[in-house]
Amino acid sequence: MADITPTELKQRQANGENPIIIDVRETWENEEVRINGSRNIPLGELPGKLDELDELKDQEIIVHCKGGSRSASAKAFLTQQGFGNVRNLLGGMQAYQQA
Image (cartoon, one colour):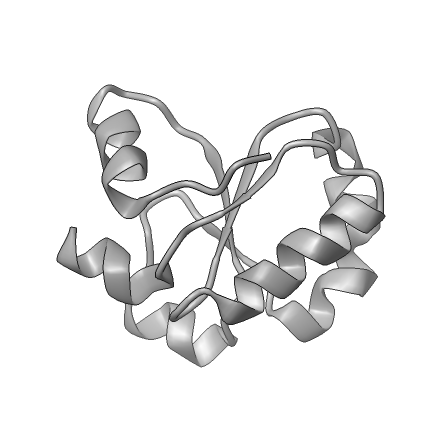
């Protein structure tokens, strides 16, 4: 699945959409600044949380981190686990804040 730009995500949110967003940054990073409606699951904890996410396998999931590299790893991992519609937020939180 193609990744998503911060501008596209913000436009969708402005249109009233509430996509599933998973923040794979550490908890302290999420506490400093977060995207409304996102769920924080640090990258290192993601393998242990798969059971909680199983019902989302066929839904669009947007993953993000600070700059995009951890979320790219999360996207690859989730895709390997059978999640078919995972998108990485390009540029991460840094780009989202500037969009």
